[in-house]
Image 1: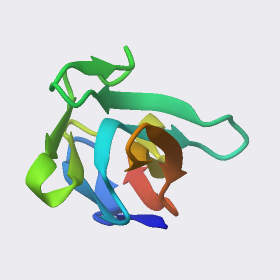
Image 2: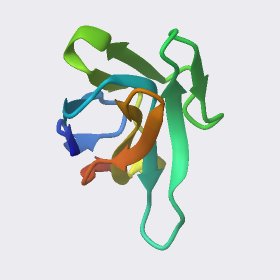
Image 3: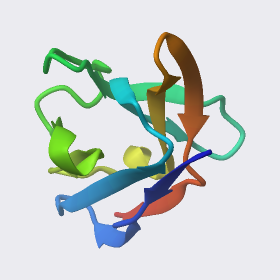
Image 4: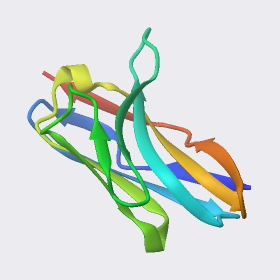
Length: 120
């Protein structure tokens, strides 16, 4: 079994910054892609940023230039640095990991989510 635990969410004023870490633990052989998604009230969950095992990153156009995703493979942790936050960034943020639990066996895992609220 694998667990993803997010933290770092909270209330921040517009223009402020937050850093979200997500740590994976459990029966992990390796981790391929890691990503952050968000879901605002009444809307579907969407990709915010993703990073491959090789470090290639991908961002939603709405956060490009403001958010940075990074990973520490030794700690099985992915980070989302969020700067210049806007009220429209308010959402529950979820961590996602593509985990190799056995050689050649991959499973997709989700964290429980962390609330980010940006006040105007």
